[in-house]
Amino acid sequence: MSHPTIERARERVLHQRLAADRGLLESLVTLPAQDVPELLALADEVREAYCGNGMNVEVLYNAKKGGCSEDCNFCSQSARFATDVDAEPLSSVEGFLEAARDAHARGAGELCIVVAVRGPSTKLLERVCSAVKLIKQQYPLHVAVSLGILREDQLRQLLEAGVDKVNHNLETSRRYFPSVCTTHSYEERWQTCMLVKSMGLELCCGGIIGMGETVEDRLEFLASLQELQPDEVPVNFLNPRPGTPFGDRSLVDPTEALRFVAMARLALPSALIRFAGGREVTLQGLQDLGMRSGASGLVLGNYLTTSGRQDDDDFAMLDRLGFEVLA
Ligand code: SF4
Image 1 (cartoon, rainbow, N blue to C red):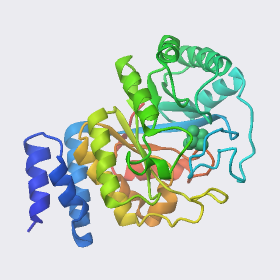
Image 2: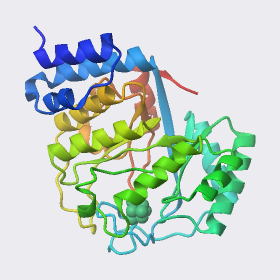
Image 3: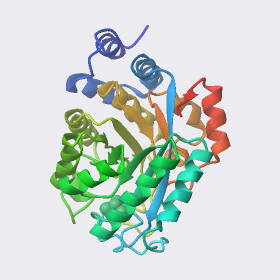
C-alpha cells in the first residue's frame, strides 16, 4: 500500500501531467525516511515518462582555475581562502580544443567550459568565443559555458559563437544566499538567468545541497527554479573543501540527497536533472540507486577541483541500468 502523499504525487505528476506544487513538495520533504525509496521509484517513473531513457553525459573543463575575486564559502577557487588550488591563467585556444577532443573521445555528448571569475573580461570572452567556434566546427558536442555574471551584449557574443547553453547557478534559496556569498547578490544571479532565457539560449541553473540550508530553504530553492524553468538543473552535494569556510561541514545524508533529486524531478518533470559535484562521496555505494531517483544526466569523472570515479565505472553502471547514453 503506497503512502498517501506518494499516491497524490503520482496522480498529479504522472497522470495529470502537472508539476508538483508547493503543498505537495512540503509533504514530500517531510515524508518518513522509510518511504523515501518509494518516492525515488516514483521520480524514476516520472523521469522515464517525461524524458525517456536517454542519459545526458557531460564533461567539465576548468579553463581558468582559481584566483576568483568572489567569496562563495563552498568554493576552493576563491582567492580569499587558503586552499590547495593553485591559480592558473586562462587556457589557450588549443587547450580548449584538447578538452573538446577529450570529452568527445570519452563518450560525452556535452562539454561545459567553466572559468573561475565573477564575470568575463573582454579578452576572456573573446578567447572563449574563438574556441567555441572551432569546437563547434570540429566536434558534435553540445557546448555549455559557465562564465559568471553576464550582460546582454556578452550573451549575444556567446550566442553568435555557437554556445548552446549557459550555466549560472542560484546555488540555494534567496534567504540563505547571503550566508553563502557576500560579494554578489542573489538578484545579480537571477538577472543573468533571466537574460540567458530572454536571449533564447538554454539555461542551466541549479545549486548545492548541504551548505547548512534548512528544509524550508530547499523548498524555496525549488520554488525559484520552478519560476525560472531552466532547461537543466545540476544538483551538487557539498564536498567540503579544506580551507574554505564550509570546509568543516558534514556530507549530506545520502537519503536526503536522493530525496532532493527526486523532488527536483517532480517539481520540474521535463528538465534535465543532472548529478553534478559530490555524487561519489555523498552516495558512496548507492550510485545505482541514485541513477534511479529521477536524474537524467551526470557529470563524468573529474569535477572542477575534485576527482570522480573512472569513466568505465559510470558507463558500466548506465549500461547495467538500461540507460541509453545520449550522443
Ligand atoms: S563559485 Fe564561482 S564566483 Fe564563486 S568563488 Fe567560486 S569561481 Fe568564484
